[in-house]
Amino acid sequence: MQVKLKLALLLALLLLVSSCLDQQHPPGLLQLTDLSTRELSAGDELRLLGAGFPEGRSARVTLRGDVFRPGAPPERDFELSFPAQTLTPHVLEAVVSEDVVTRLCGGPGVQRATFRGDIVAAFAPRKSGAAPVTGALEGVVLDLESSRVSALERDQAASEGQRFASFLGIELAHGSTGALRIAKLQDGSRAQEVGLQPGDLLEELSGVRLRSLADFVPPPRASMARVGLRRAGHQSATVAVEIAGFRPGVLSDLVPALSLLGGLTLLLLLAISPLGRCFAWFELKLAQRARELRSPSRTSPARALVHGVATALPSAAGAHAGVALGSSLLALSAFGVTLVARELDLLLLLLMGGTALCCAASLTGPRNEQGLVKLASAAYRGLLAALLQLPIAAALMVSALDAGSLRVDDLSEAQAGAFWNYSAFRSPLHFAAFAAGVLSLIPEVGTASDSAGRARRWPALAVVEWAQLVLAAGVLSIALLGGTSLTGASELARGSGVEQLIGTVVLVTKTLVLVLVVSVGRFALGSVRLEACEALLFKAALPISVLLPLLTRLWTLAAESALLATYRSAAALALCAAAAAALLLFVRRMAQRLRAPRPEFGINPWI
Image 1 (cartoon, rainbow, N blue to C red):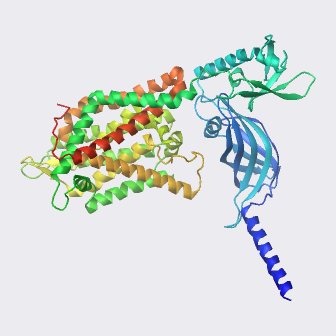
Image 2 (image 1 turned 30 degrees about the horizontal axis):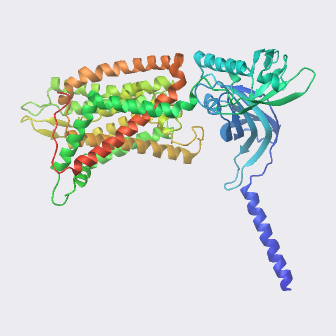
């Protein structure tokens, strides 16, 4: 009896384990049989043929396998998902977007890519907690072609293909089926040693399907290359050829070294330029202000510095309400809630905040004997507040010219990936637009001078001032600091509420960090009023705001049509490294100044 009971318990345990395993692996109830096409570009429709597709239901199509690109090492265990829609019970259609093609091609400068692996289609279950319904098509080969490649980049890739053909000792021509055909073969060449013959059609090179001479580029640092060919009257074959002596003409392997060298050069130029003296003066002011706040309860300068920065942060109820209002509007934009139109919402937020700030600046103007605001002074302060918004608008325009859109999701997708892909690091002009936008947030519009020349604040306007500050910092974060994109996350892995929530948290966090930076600047410089910035606004902010979008557009065109196109990533890495090194140096020098026994003094470098 006991033996039977033990056997029954063991059988029940096995059934329980098997049911758990079945829940972990989705049931493959869909039948995928074929694809409508094997060659795709942006805007094409990828149709999966099969049976059992629920009509009218949306699905997710996932590519799992390896990606091969000309002149680049293969990317193993690649995975990418994008949405699809059921047309009929036998057809599932997915529109291939430009972002999908860019992700497969691996970024700018790569025209083609070959995917080899499996395609998995998955439908969400009707019941909560159930496993999705899936189906897979194995052994798929897809060719992707990107349209984001300039003529110069195509010519450079074709030159590399010609160099590699000369290295092998062959002369190539286009075959009738689109593959490359060997027109001539040099005696004693590497190609002849491995058995290649004139008339052979070359179909593949190290996993890449060949369609043009630009595809005939081997991976870097490879000692052997696999060449797939088809000979008249024979089946396809693959031969291995030694390429250890071939060196790529494009110095992609030197990008990290070039980035480090460029970053150090930029840091040196910053140190010897007037901006370096401005940084030194700002350090002195910050350290001096921290020492002024030392008290018996705050003997440490660092503790006094933290206390001083905290005084520049929101403290009154109105200020907290302004921060909450600005953060809420940014969160709605990140969640995709449309205020007027998705293409105009950012401009609308900036216009709303700027208009409210201009009204607040007018109300804080000088008053006459009856206590009424002087109209001329109110209008002039409103004009100064409007000029203060121009660098923010210029920064948004600079990013929109690159992304080709003003939508929050489009701006974020254009900056997805590592943090050096943010628009702020794409060129010195982009970084200048970011710096100008941050500096324009430091003046306090809610502070004015009374009849005796003393600073006077208007607590009732704290809601407007802080809401506009958060909105402007959010626009800068969206335009130049990646927006809702998170470093290390795929720009295409979106769609669920949890992912949108994470993107919203990322955007609000970046915005609040910018607000903290502005608060540090306000603490170091004191209450900077609009009247103190009058000359700077007319002589610097206005012309910079007009010229920056124009110069940035010229830079973008030059980067697409000149040698700089090959090293855009190196330039971005160099600028990012220089900014990170400058920040670390600033923190280190501030720690040294705060530990110094005597205060140091310096003059204003702008005098």
